[in-house]
Image 1: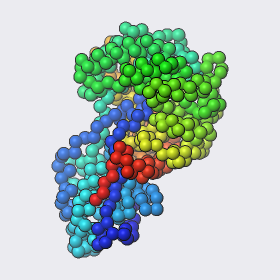
Image 2: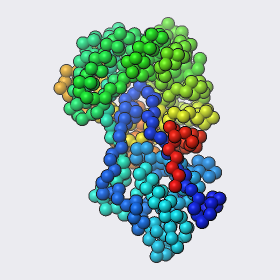
Image 3: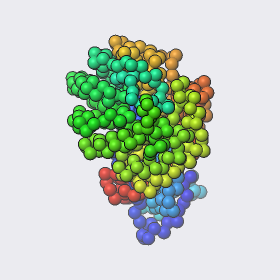
Image 4: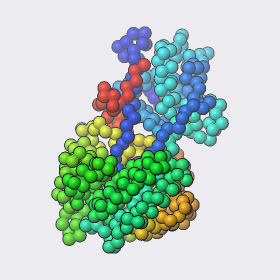
Length: 532
Ligand code: SF4
Ligand code: SF4
């Protein structure tokens, strides 16, 4: 719980200002090659205009910290509060604000004072009424404070009752433009058969995606042009995205597109075209030099690092900022700090993703996640981030399939808002199960069939996962990749095999975000500074 801090803040009569720092609304632009949280959670806060949001002016209301709220000391005089259950619920408090928060949520003293009014009049400590009201309003708005006794119908069963909640607004589709690739990465799950998607199949897949988006009430479609190596089919990317743009316009839906590439085939002209089409680019880079090459080599065995590094700089030179996807395994964990320094020097968005074993990669035993190696490598990378804190938000991609930027109950969009089209127009639930389709692009509503499937991968809510239900991090972690859990345990309804790694890293990641807010507290594009 919050500590009651010393009140000597240099002001007088308890009237010194309270300062709260919260992230400015700005999307995290990282990409990864899953349907993971970024897509599932492209979300909006629920309007908070119900009967529960009524009481900030009423000083007789008793408040308490919202369930799930995490409190963490940040520096000697700053604390961080966050509620994983609520979208965008994170703030850094100075000593005055923390003391006020502590008093506001403390159990009632033995006095006749009403819960909040005891803070502002004769009852100690003497906080100005203005500050109490301001902090109460902010705390409630951010999902950190709830009424101790709520009249809301949902209060008994829903810890987020009355608080802003995220809902998915985008339907994401993976378009497998080809199974071919010029690399042979050790963790790849594809057989690399020589098969391509035809333009007709691509258009059918896009039509199917828009049909399902409309039928299921989505506001936006996100297309992932993937493979194999999608740059082998660059003309098809252009053709399909222009077709998708027309469909989006016709149906009044938003459209986003990203190319998931190994980077080695990128040319300046491609980069300029991607920019012109409004497409993003994700490039896989797993380390510097030999660390990258230890995972990602050409079919002939030569390492690909030099070409990938060149591609990143080429993209930047043509005005395209690629997002870097780093796959972390025990084989490369030691090199994480160096690649993080390289990424941050170029101010690139990034995601750090844990290696997931599959049938084709299982023989590479040295890639399996050794907890100590992965934690040490990740913490070394975090140290580099701390020394070079970027303006850009990073909580969405800093720890594997967790997304600490937004509360969510499901790890990814599988079975909810995700379609994977293979080169023949068959539809699977996850790209790693691309050879196990559940329907095809001609279905009237492919998403409805994906959602109804009970045989393949099951994306269980974290509230139903054994070992996760009481975890304070559950609405950021959501229990990890369902496929990885199933492979390790034979069940979908239990916590991730990477749980110990996650739990070791979450507090450190949260601390980095707090430090980022402190560093950029005077930059309104990065931080909203609330002075009360
Ligand atoms: S996998 Fe572990 S860290 Fe994640 S929600 Fe479950 S118990 Fe919490
Ligand atoms: S099931 Fe696992 S691999 Fe598939 S999209 Fe979800 S998190 Fe990614």
